[in-house]
Amino acid sequence: MTAADTPVLRLEAVRKTYGRDRVVLRDVTLDVPPHTVTALIGASGSGKSTLLRCANLLEEIDDGAIFLDGEEITDPRADPDAIRRRIGVVFQSYNLFPHMTV
Ligand SMILES: Nc1ncnc2c1ncn2[C@@H]1O[C@H](COP(=O)(O)OP(=O)(O)OP(=O)(O)O)[C@@H](O)[C@H]1O
Ligand SMILES: [Mg+2]
Image (tube, rainbow, N blue to C red; front, side, top):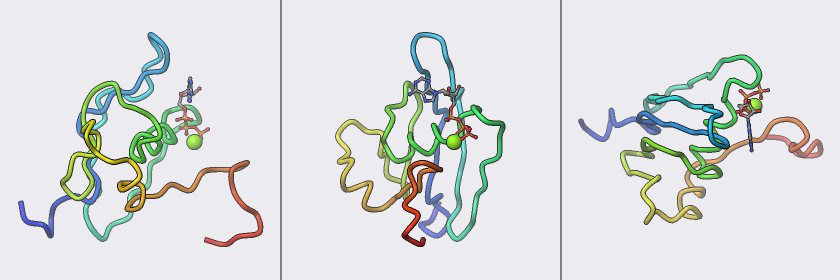
């Protein structure tokens, strides 16, 4: 695989649970190719925000791996601050700043 077709973001069999038995992400595998827009669609409570929080390392995943530009960011040795300088999340309502634009 060349750099040109390495996914910008890759989730590989990501599993995320809350508590003992609330499985929110069950083996989610997803590639976001360079220069593309990916929309995540699902019912309220289906895990969209959880997936984004996992990708930004705001939540720890239970299994699987997440890669940014081919580099595993869920590796325990990865530096979350350095990674968050390369990937951001805009939170949904109640956490937006009404006086600021994108
Ligand atoms: N910190 C938490 N502790 C326990 N359960 C949680 C936590 N955060 C989210 N959940 C649960 O995980 C599930 C997925 O929530 P999430 O917020 O990811 O859904 P969503 O797809 O973003 O929903 P919406 O469309 O309403 O934004 C829901 O059942 C929610 O109640
Ligand atoms: Mg949400």
